[in-house]
Figure: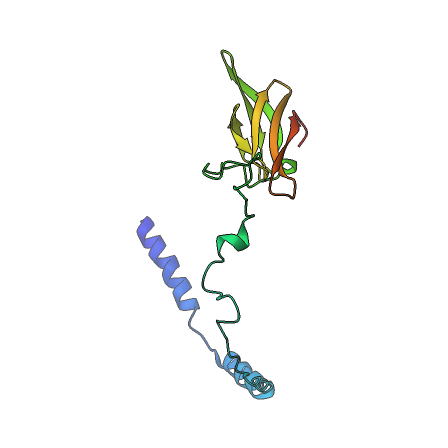
Length: 173
């Protein structure tokens, strides 16, 4: 019984879709005849100017710059304080100390690690001897309230001097 009722209602709606559409077709043809789209002409393409690239006069844009152009050269012939050039850079040595914040500590027995947050909200666990900052900063002391860092600052004559920096615990966002 329900199936017959469903079929009857469906048949009613299907027959209601068939009807006189002449008024709709008349409206469409008159609207198309009255409204002609005006498309402006395209602007003339700019004239091409040929550029001769002389690779012998300029650095090729397809070759990465040499190390001398991108890194500070360190004169290792002098007998003074120098950073370790063979040491692999750490993950936090691409951030300035101003862009790092101490957010807390973790400890296990007598070892304390500092939790340091970067400006992109990543948090890292760092201990004594690890490096951070742009100037070869090495962590020398970690307490519950601060981290002591010794940085190597170039003095302009090819040597480097040590500078003590501190990063204190901050809780604000």
